[in-house]
Amino acid sequence: MTVTLGVHASNPSLYYLARLPYLDEELAPLGETGAFHHYADGTRTGALLAEGVIDFGGTGSTPPITAQAAGHDLVYAAVSAPRPDHGALLVLDSGPVRTVADLKGGTVVLSVGSWQTHLLAKALHAQGLSYGEDVTPARPAAGEDQARRLRDGEIAGWIAQGAELAAARRTGEFRELVRTGDVITDRSVFFTRRDFATGRPEVVAAIATALRRADAWVAANPAEAAAIAAENLGGTAADWQAALVALPWRLEPATAGFVAEQQEAADIFHGVGFIDRALTVADAHLSALEAPVAAALAKAV
Image (cartoon, rainbow, N blue to C red; front, side, top):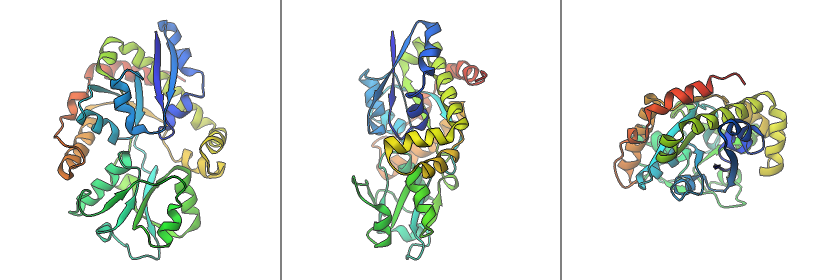
């Protein structure tokens, strides 16, 4: 059997695993082989799982919630440690936006449907504002310079991550109105179909081991990892290295505590109309997976 993992640039663990030999090495004792399906938009992960195109995927916190709301029968497999410095909501330091409340009526550029939606929705919610009514969330268009748009007053805020955030920080022109860790845990989230999780928990555990090894490789080789990202994704190697060393590179089982974090997000999303029905996130929590995944993540690299 071939086990197919979904890969997109927004999930760093899977991005690097696809460039390393660890998946096949971990699957071989189980008589399995690995394959990678590359795609651009991480918000499609739930649909690709449901369609059988992939068997396992990873995103930020929001896509599994929207996938569950769409009726996809997914199961959480593992999560990263919190990533407090993964991203930030930037505003022009010399501009009029001094607080989250000042965003009201303005446009905020973000990757709609990603963890960035969770960040903005929760930050607004804490101030009594609505993601659905009080700001205009806008997807970045290809080739747009969001730093310039902030300077020119075209947008009120911009949620940046990775090399773009590192580059923006270097200019000294922008202020971090909201640091990710001040609002959400912002974990990488790994999930699969229920039939796959219940039928082959040992394969899920092997994938977790492979991901852990990939994470350890990046943590030990940040300059080489940064050069790969710069060559393939743009930006400078220096900015990518700054972004990569800010990540924890540590995975954990999906526990009830994580489910509570997701439930809070799902409730906010339903309240503002981002998802059209209330969810019980615990329906996607398979407690029987915790022990094999924990054991896999505890293995020596």
